[in-house]
Amino acid sequence: MPCLVVVGGFYGDEGKGKIIAYLARKGNPSIAVRGGVGPNAGHTFTSDGKTYKVRMLPSAALNPSTRLLIGAGVLVSPEILQSEIALFKAEDRTYIDSQCGIIEQTHVDKDLTEKHLRTDIGTTGTGTGPANAERAMRTLKIARDIPELSLFLEDINSSVNYALDNKQEVLVEGTQGTFLSLFHGEYPYVTSKDVTASAICSDVGIGPKKVDEVLVVFKAYVTRVGGGRLQNEISAEEARARGWIEFGSVTGRQRRASPFDMDLARKAIRLNSATQLAVTKLDVLFPECAGVTSYSKLTSDAKRFIENIEGETGMKVVLIGTGADLNDIIDNRPMAR
Ligand code: IMP
Ligand code: MG
Image (cartoon, rainbow, N blue to C red; front, side, top):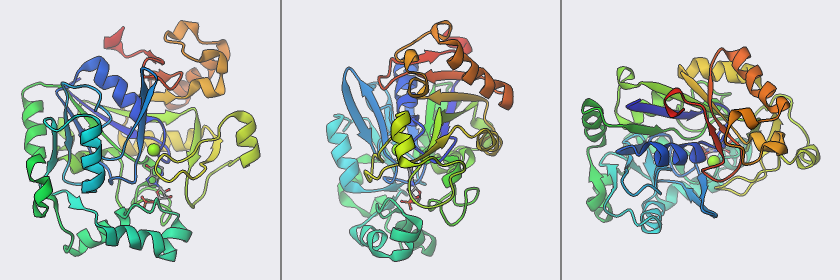
């Protein structure tokens, strides 16, 4: 599986960070490369009792032998990037494309103060929308304009294509989720770019024929932050009673919640040309499954839940999350068994 693209199937926060961190530890890819919008996404993973959050680096950051790359389509906040590089001691293995757009304070201020963005859309307030607007105007600064970033610049599309041409393993990390796509989500309650698998590939500079597998990650229930429709949304009290309460990793806002949505899942599979699925947080629906690492040890209710998804979508669920730690996972990939 030389080129695996991982994307979110709902509204972000499906647990891509944990899945990617696990895949990076298990498969030891030579490159992990991040696509997507930018620091509006927070990917979280827990290993050996410690929880990490990345908003710029790929979620493979714990693997010291994986090069951590950021594609040209991604907006970079130099401060956040530099603090994460320091945290993961990744000075000598982090590279960003010289054409990554740069988020400045003015973009953040605009995102936090414009009523349309702040109140109506309910953005993360991280400046990504205003920066992408400037990019479309061709006035945005890019990474090669920023002296402090000069050590980290690389031609990312060339590195990624070279690795693939030499049969090395490359993990491509998407951010946000399918239904936050500017084109395919519920406009205007969306992010400032397309974030489906094709767009993530474009962000890092690979064409569709370079991709071997597209893994779409779903959570066992759906959450959404900010405005827009959420089919079958449950109340905050109901979410608390079910243990579905979550808070945004970037904004701290309480996430809205609804049960797993099969129609959305089917549409996400279509929009991303999924070849395999992951389902995270199964233990939240079925507490007896917490920490289970083999499919046969799941309760019959939990198995039925997974098999129903497989039956309704015609796709295999190859990874199942059963807890926060990287090791709390059932790995049913054909090669992993
Ligand atoms: P923006 O991307 O900050 O402009 O926000 C636009 C919409 O996308 C808002 O509803 C945000 O809550 C949502 N959003 C953006 N990034 C993420 C993410 O990584 N996870 C969940 N929601 C996100
Ligand atoms: Mg998130």
